Length: 164
Image (tube, rainbow, N blue to C red; front, side):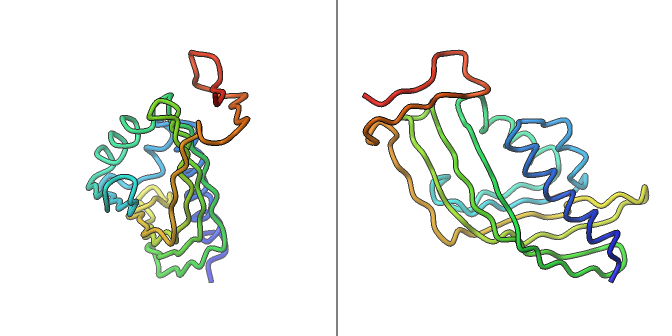
């Protein structure tokens, strides 16, 4: 097994998740192959959301995950198979989404990412395809949580949210 490639693939997945959560769209761009595809199987989004091309994926994330959407993604337990300059990986993940501008809702869920990776001519591993189907997902209106107070929001231009 090519241990160096294995670690580089892990790093590109972690970078993808970090850049999504921190809204670092320019940095995320280099984690995706130019012709990358994505399929996000999320019921709250109305079913599977499919995108073709790095720019389409970035446009969706940039336009959907604005300042009123706080996300945190945690992935682990990678199972990665490398075959030359391509690889496939499965990752367990959980995420939390706080939609402060959309009815103050929390979305919580888990899934398994099914990814493909490719090593470019420059020797850099990038995500060729990323996608998941939820194992579960639930929504909770934040106003329904007694005493709930959002004490920090990196992107907020208004005071933190407090349940009434």
